[in-house]
Amino acid sequence: MMLKVIAAVLPVVFSASSWAVNFESCPGPSAIQGVNGIYTAPTASGKGEWLGVVNRGPASAISSFESAVFYPSGNQSGNVGTVGYCEYKTQDGVSMNMRYRPGETPDVAVKLRNAENWKEITTGLGLVLYECANKAPGVCAFSEVEG
Image (cartoon, rainbow, N blue to C red):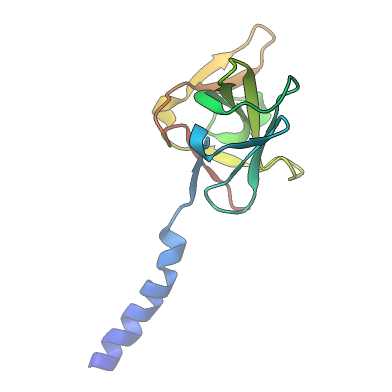
């Protein structure tokens, strides 16, 4: 009897990792390292990094997260697309945008999480995007689309 229970439970235990969804979000300011105007931060999954560049002067520490921008697929409303950037301010007041896994071509497809925090905006030129300006850590979240 015990062998039957173990045989029934083992597949569930080993497949539990498939239940887990890796959520990503804009890195917190303290996770961002800057050297010579080039800023990097690890992704939550460890699959890559965030990258940003400031063209003015030496690297200044990041002081605040400002917002995140997401572009939906096909320029249509929806929660699948690509991360445009996460915007930060340096201690010098300079804006800096970080890109998610910029070495990947095409851009990594993602799905928005915490959708209530992402506001849909249509620009005057008809570009559809979503912006998340909630400054709480991890709120501007998304997950990679497995494909």
